[in-house]
Length: 468
Ligand SMILES: [Fe+2]
Image 1: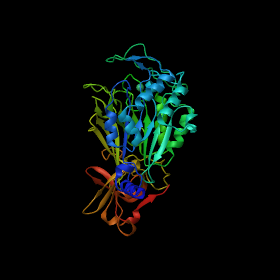
Image 2 (image 1 turned 135 degrees about the vertical axis):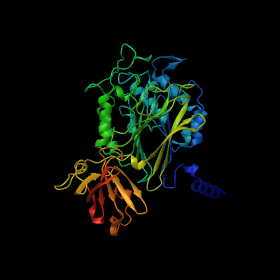
Image 3 (image 1 turned 90 degrees about the vertical axis):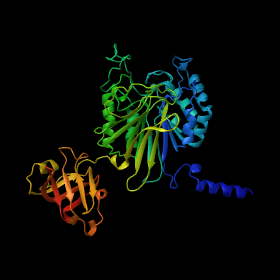
Image 4 (image 1 turned 60 degrees about the horizontal axis):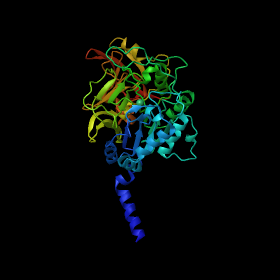
């Protein structure tokens, strides 16, 4: 009888994806995330997130409000932090979610223990232990002895790996004084921007650890920060208050050639997706999901944010990432969902757009860069070497366009056209994917198309992939 029950159970597990909540190969396809959940108020959205059945759930901070007593703010004690986590664990919807997902969490100020506080917080080590107790970190785990609660984990098989990196933006963060007066149009006094070696967001140990993590192989990297990284025109806490530290983060992502980075953030009691095309050499998204039950009730005029892609200026919400691992181009959906679970705003991001650019390869004598080719005359024969940032496959007749710039409209862009005759022998099946995000050397004649110079390649031997 027991053997039968076990066999039936095994069959259900193998055939029903919900049981194992992963694809057959263990790839993650659904991640939920959010922040700002006051345990003293109802939080029905936990039930909705549990119903969504995320394989991984990321809490980005202010996961409880330990510094809130009867609606008034007061620095927490370790006992009150523990009590707040116990209250969250006793919420049936959250308990159901925790049972059925892989839960990861960092903290922000209200669960750390005091509003907008940094490394000066007296209970920071005690608070870290309360967070580990809440998460169920094993008692012998070295993470319980670590200074700060940063952590990382890789999920999924090679080729479909998702790395979740959670930063600690509190434990090491240097002090952040407020200005005497509000900015025009704001009620809150802004923080005074901090620069120089004394101004720290992550601290030396965490920076070293982050560099190691960014070199770990992964196809998609979720970088969780309790506070916003890109949006920086508001007077509240953000990486923009530490401009050198933020630039260091961008420079580190570039230096590690870390592809696939998507930032998640919280803290702001609003939902929005921001993006920056220049920061790391590929589109960098910062998805802010901040209001599990602390979202703005009613519509709120979106604040200035020149990096905004889309806003959700109303209501409680949570974020989701859905990954379709289809070949050859996986698609990543970055979503903000309402309290009923419906998608409110979404960015569809092809994963092969988020590719780090390698350091340029040396160009041999007699070979030109794209800038020099654009200065040549129509009809000149050239050999050009460049990194392929974009392009297009065309049919009837088959041609492939290789662009040196992500935007074909850019005045810096040079297009190399591989004509139909360039596809024979080994190159017969070549297409854009063969050359995209690689360095190529092309030989051909400069021609004009729609008033723009291009280089036409006619033979397979005249287009070469250059290895590092
Ligand atoms: Fe916060």
